[in-house]
Amino acid sequence: MRRIKVDWKAWLIFGAWQDDSHRNDGCKCFLAAVVIVWRFDYEPDPAGSLRTPGLFCIVWVLNEGVKQRMFVKMMFEKIMILRSVWVAVMMCLVAGPIYAEPLPGKPSQVNMAGINEISGIVKSRRFDDVYWVHNDSGDEARLFALDSSGEIVFPGFLTNDFHGSLVESSKEPWPGHRVRVAANIDWEDIAIDDEMIYVADMGNNGNARRDLGVYVIPEPNPRAVESTRPIRYLPIKYPEQERYPADQWHFDSESLFVDNGTLYFISKHRQAGQILNFEPGANLYRLDTQHTDRQNALVKIDHHDRLAVATGADLSPDGRWLAVISYLDLWLFQRPASGDQWFTGKAFRKSLDPTQVKTMEAIAWEDNDNLVVVNEEGEIYRVSRDTIAPHIADE
View 1 (cartoon, rainbow, N blue to C red):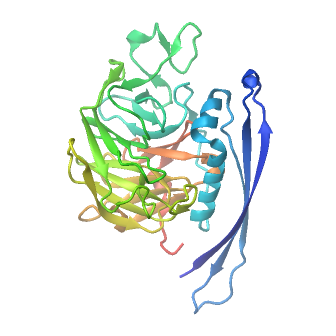
View 2 (view 1 turned 90 degrees about the vertical axis):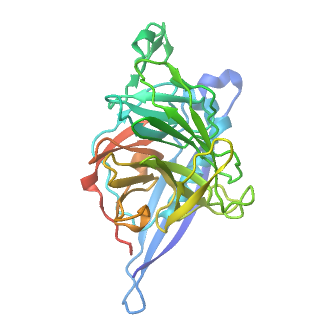
View 3 (view 1 turned 180 degrees about the horizontal axis):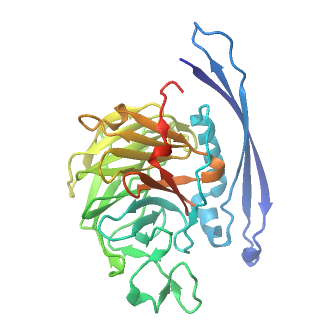
């Protein structure tokens, strides 16, 4: 068995930049660039022979959040300077000996003013060529419907008032399908079955929230209605968490999937008290109750040592494959022969090139053989299941 020793150093370079479009505001932002150099030393087990040469990698992570329409959001909501560091630290933490191949093809691009930080995607089972997406924390409580090319889908009777991806100066941009009587505190993923959409308000970066939960929404026809509302809100808690913030920061989740009406969640781990420092490993939880008047305690059913920083999940339409996306990997887990301990079955893994895919946040099955993966920047990639190789546990 080979062990991996990782040594890394990071240099942060900050430069002030004045956005001309906001010169009158006197506002300034910072571009953050991170240069990381790390080394992998392969150490054989005691019976082995010589150590193989170290692999040196240089990664330049450049904050791409400086866009005119994202200026205020970048400065005051998301602190994009720290996001650059966040991605860089994560890469150093969870990286193994990665041989990433770029995803094939040119991605399609979502170009819509209201869609500025995609955090979840799912394909409709009721309506043709419809994918539902939502933004990350701080946005309105709303969903956007897209077609397979990334174009906006909304009611035809509103086209005199609103435009889609193609800007029309006399019209307002489509604001999305508003979800009434709901709040987006930190929406992180979305799941779907034949009847319902499930929106996970489960983001818990600081491991201090006591109001986690899931909205249950009858799937609306995006071409026929302009808004919707949940029929239930399911309050959720982790039974292991007794303090807020927790002593162990393993109570954040950005990955939700549904299997025969049962909801499952995959956790995302940080070092306690260090919001930018991730830990490898993930827990799989199941929701066994659906109370609306009190908290529902999750049940921990499985654990995976190598899965790290999971940001989205989806179950294939035939129920045979669980797909999980992270910043560095796309994982597939074959349905176990019995039970629902998905992480203990056969696993497949595709390493991603972060310089290509950027901040990967969402995943959905198009059919039983093909996936769509989406980053926060709205780039949509397509991946065939056949291109994802079996995971070798000793990598």
